Image 1 (spheres, rainbow, N blue to C red):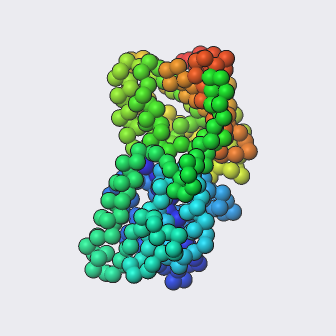
Image 2: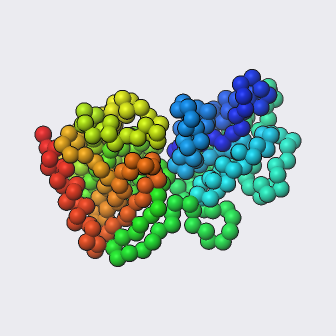
Length: 329
């Protein structure tokens, strides 16, 4: 799972920054490590001038957030509101003896204690990790904690014959393992790099189990040497440099090859001819299709879920097959 830590940052060497760092290093980080969760805070982003944009991306793609209420920072409350609007679970942290604002009293709040004795005993991370396990049991389910029957941000869809159009391609990590666990006959994936799948807990096991069911599996990702790669990466949006991106997508493909080594009905190919101009996931008789747009991060591109009754289904399937055949050998 992925966690984004919402926290006041403050300038270096200020009491606000020192307190935020103490809570992160003594409470949050140890709990994330014990729970095998990847986490980061906004100031961990190295792209100067892009912290706010990356912060929103991190919130909306996190499986859950941990929010530090120290000082009742208005930016923290705003970021909590963003997470709540998307239905993303938030664990609130407040120092022992401090009462949170009235509109958060009904939320689940963990009161940490930075006294040396409790830090030495590891009491804070232990208690926080228990709350993280409660979040894990939600299995990716999202709920807006205000209003009646409101759909989480990014989950609005409009119906059309054989397809659903979703405004954004945001999905929790568990969404992908659940999709794979439900496949029975074929899984075809065409994507720029699929670099995120490698870090999803349980993904390796789900893929191995899928191959063990005699399912036909095809993985197709861009080759780092493909001249289209640097042209597809918008440096004003991507948080990863083009050079690093190339090594990441090749490393991800090698990870898939290692998982499927020696298994029948499985193929992993690099796109050296043509380009993955869209993410295509064929799961039995349904397709999830999302275009790669230069103007927005992939997670904010629209996603169209297509079933076999739609005239778009054979069109998208043919696009995958053409790229697959063009990059044989």
